[in-house]
Amino acid sequence: MGFIKNKLIIIIGSIAILLSAAYIIYSLSTSGLFTSPPPDIPLTVTEEIRLDNLGSAGRLEGNVALVSVFANDNKCSWDFDSEKDRQVRENMLSYIDIAAEWLSVQAEGYGKTLNFCYARDVQSDLYFETSLDVNCMDLQKAVDKSAPVEWEYIDKNIDSAGIKEKYGCESIVYFIFINQTDEGGTAAYALNVYNRSLDYPYEICFLPVNFGSSFTAPSVIAHELLHTFGAPDLYSTDDNYNSVNYGTTLEFKSYCEENMPSDIMMTTNVIVDGESIKLTDCIENEITEITAYYIGWLDTPPPEVDEYGLVHNQFENYNG
Ligand SMILES: [Zn+2]
Image 1 (cartoon, protein in one colour):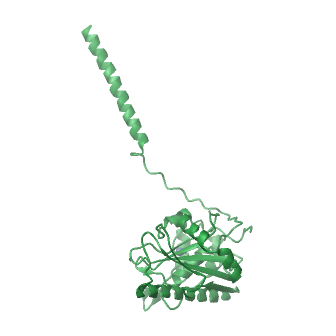
Image 2 (cartoon, helix red, strand yellow):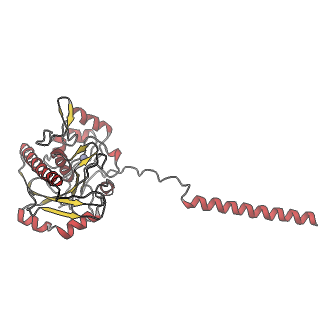
Image 3 (spheres, helix red, strand yellow):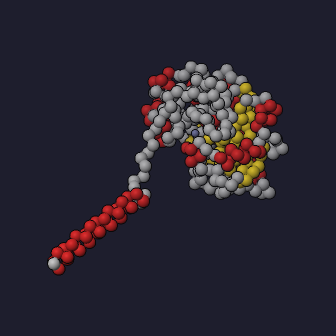
């Protein structure tokens, strides 16, 4: 009897241990501690872009307003009591001037008339200063296509309708200048409406004073501005980012490197005496036909667009 009792205890004990072990394994497996990260979201390219709203930056022609916001954020701030920061601000305003002038000349080359209205000094009604309780230099905003803090600031503080009326313009681009001076900082980037509509229409260029080992030069302002009007980067591919949606591939990138090495969407640098540098007093890059097509300066896509299976521009099926 004692033998059977012991055996029964062993069996019940074993079952209890097995059940506990199973429970522990189940708990761990559902705890998230040991689950593998979700697989990379596969790239989904919308083959056809149908929009009834191109965002605040619609077509790059006619009159276009550029609003400059010099913003303090969670990481960087401006001190306009200091001579240094006033000088940097003056530089940035003069770089807008150079970029605007250059883009207008490029537009002429494609038979388009383009005039920019922008702040030349701090008295302008296109000049703003603010503090934003957020890290503006966060590339995730471009990936997620979302910048609620910046959008709400613009929505509440900038009379976009009044600006459009006063300057007779259809399009507005918002420049947010961040006094990021550390060389390792986040690069300039644009948050643009391209293949889908967003919560707010405001298209923003985030422009840090310094980034990487580089800085916001006139060519950088022009490059980011062109993104807001639909231009893709030619130096990288859709494979690098999931929300790019141009269908650009490594093959196309190599083609561009070979055939349009100085397009402003390929590089914001120029080679001077064998050295790749950014100019501060002019822009010497080009707007080649690919970029011109994507910003709506050419109605017919250049042959490369279909040869490389790229997505057609946002203007072809525009419903607005
Ligand atoms: Zn870019």
